[in-house]
Image (cartoon, rainbow, N blue to C red):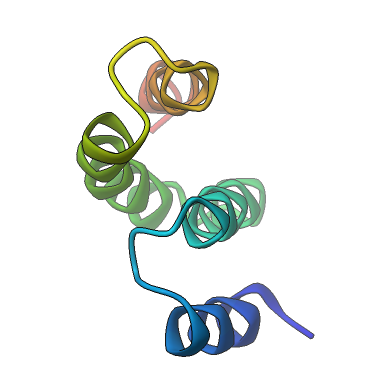
Length: 77
């Protein structure tokens, strides 16, 4: 199943800010970036960053990974 389908299904069963849903959103953004849709990926990561900070905290490893992807792909846009 594709990322968007998984994300829709997981969001329906869990909340939009559930850690598993946040992980799926991260994966979707990474897939988008690798497929050349960098602008959409950056937009997804930007929104995800705020949710990750609120749910997981500023210093959580997953929050750090989002920042790293924003920095990496932001220089390639």
